[in-house]
Amino acid sequence: MEQFTINSSGHYMITVTGNGLSGEQQLNAINKQKIQIISRQVLLNPDYNKQILSKGEQCTLIIIPTRNFSGHTQKEIDKFVENQWGYKKSIASVIFPLLENGETPVLMENMGVRYIASTGIPIADSAVLPNVLGLSIPSKTSKVVLLDAFYATPDRRWDNKGALIYIAPQ
Image (tube, rainbow, N blue to C red; front, side):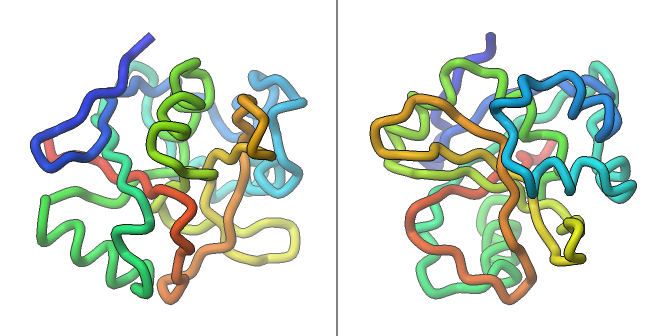
């Protein structure tokens, strides 16, 4: 199991490896009790399959708390993050290694966040609303991390209770 580390900018990071699974295959591979209904709908959308890490492909994820960007839109955050550190937007499938990593609840507790969201291209749910995949902890006393989906548009302003995932430059 990969461990989270902190880079020179003070951001948590972890290298993950893709499994190459389609949305439907990924859905069948996950414990059903760890999946929120909207994330299930996002996985079944064919657009999810355009945001998959190939089997064996590796990338380094950077996780930045949303409190660092209070009042800014997703579009503004993405531009700042790329200009400041060279990080790129993530893709949907990078969330699964974090879901499977037993250290993720500890990371979330250490960061003081209730959710971690991808910054990938939003994928429609069954109501055709744009969503990004992420992880959430259902209550303050829970240590269970659930696969979730979050409404996302370029004009979305995140609250200060979460973190966003980016990909470090190669």
